[in-house]
Image (tube, rainbow, N blue to C red; front, side, top):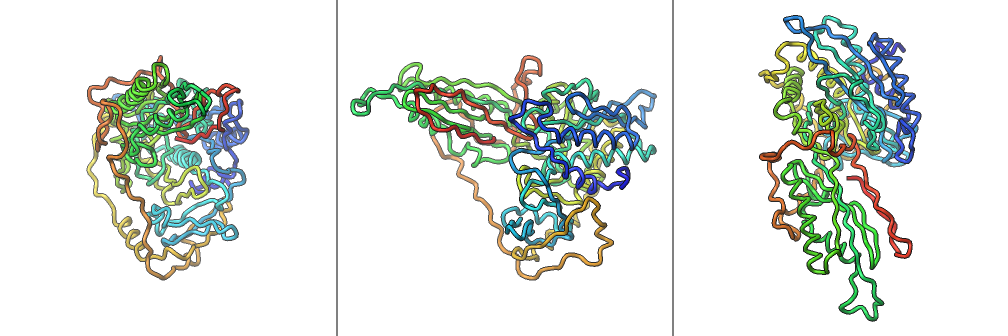
Length: 551
C-alpha cells in the first residue's frame, strides 16, 4: 500500500505492530531498538510525503517541517507551531506481538477481546465505552496493551501532515513535528534539544478521553523521603527504652489524612501517596509522592510532612525522624495562563469548528507539555482519543482518530490568521445530536452479550461498504457499578497549616511563578510517575523487600 494515501486508522494499525516498549533497566538511548525501527519508518514516510528538514538524530528523535502557506498580512512570518507525540509504549503491561482487532458498529454491550481466555471488556467496569455506541472500536486481543498511548497521536499527526502537504491551499504557519523516545520511563527529554524543535508554541497529542479534551493543567509534584532512627533493645527489657523505627514510620503515615490518599481523590484534589516502606527496629525509611494542582496547597502539603516530623521528634526525641523533600515538576498552567491562553482558546475554537464540545480536564500526573512549558515552549496537551492506557483493556475508536485529524488541520488553519495569538473565542452552534442518540442507544442496549471482533489486518474496510453491521442484541440495560466518593473529613491532621477543602479551581493567587528550568527541578516525563528508589538499609538491619508503586 502507498503509505501516503493511508487513512489514520491504517497508519495506526501499522504502527502498533512495531514493538516499541521502553525499558527502564536499559542504559541505552533510546532504551529499546524498536523505537529506532519506528523512527526510521516515520522519517521515510515523512520524506515520501514531501516534508522538509526530516531528521532522525543520534538519539532516535524524529523531526520534520511542514513549510508555511500563510504569512501575516504585512508579509511577516507567523509563529511556528509544533506537534509532538512519543513513540514508546509502557512497560507496565505486555506489549510484544500486539494483535489489534476492530469491533464494528458497537452497540453498547461487552466486547469479547479474547474468547479462548475469557477476556471481556465490559461497560459495567468501563462505562466510558457507552460514549462510543455506533462507532468502530479498536482493541488488542486482551493479552497485551494496544499502544494508542503514543501511537494514536503519531498516526493523527502524520495524517495531518499528509493532508497539509497534499493541499497547499490550506493556510497555516510553519509547522514542526517531533516524535520522542522513552516517555513512559521518564526519559522523554533526557537528550532532547528544544532548539532543534525550533517552535514558538506547541501541542502534545497524547491525552486520554474524548477527542474534544484539552489539558493545560497538571500536578505540582514532589518526592519525600522519611527516615526514622529507632533504638533496638531486647524485647524482654524493652519497657520504656525501645523505640521501634518501623512503628514510628507507620505512625507518621497514619498522621496523614485518609481522604488525601490517591485512591480517595479525583479531579483537582491532590494527595499524599506512600510509595514504599522498608525497615526494622533501629532504622526505617519510607518514600512519599506529594501532588496538588494548587501551588499554595502543594506547598502546604510539604509543610504538613515537616510538621509531622517535628511532632514525632518532640514525642520521641530530637533526630528520631528526618524528612527531606525534592520538587520534581510543576503545573504548566503557570506558564500558559494568562500570557499564552491563546493556545487553549484556539484549541477550543477548533473543537467548536469541528462540531464538538470543548472539554477541559486537569492532568492527574505530568505531561511532556509540563517539561516543555518550563523549558520555554508553552505546550498544552490534546487528546488522541484513547482510553485505559497502559493496560490490556486499552481501546480507541476509529471515528475519534478521524476527528482528531480534522481538529489538528482546523487548529493550524486558525493559527494561519493574523489574529490567532489573540485567542478570541468564536461562537458556534454545538452539534450534540449524535451524542444524545448514542446515549439513548446505550440505554436500550444489552450489557450482557459480548460482541466479537474482526481481525485488523492493517487495511480495515470502510464500514459503509460492509454487507451487514454487527448483530444487535436484545435485553434490558444492566446497572453500571459506580464507586462512592469517600468522606471528606477522615484522618488525623497534625499540621496547623494543613490544606483546606478542594477548590473548584486551583488557587494560585499570591504565588510567584515556579522556578524556571534553570536551577529548578526537571519535570518528569509525560506518561509515568516514576517510583523513587530508597537507599538500601544496612545489611545488619533485617528489612522486608521494597514495594514500589506508580503514582
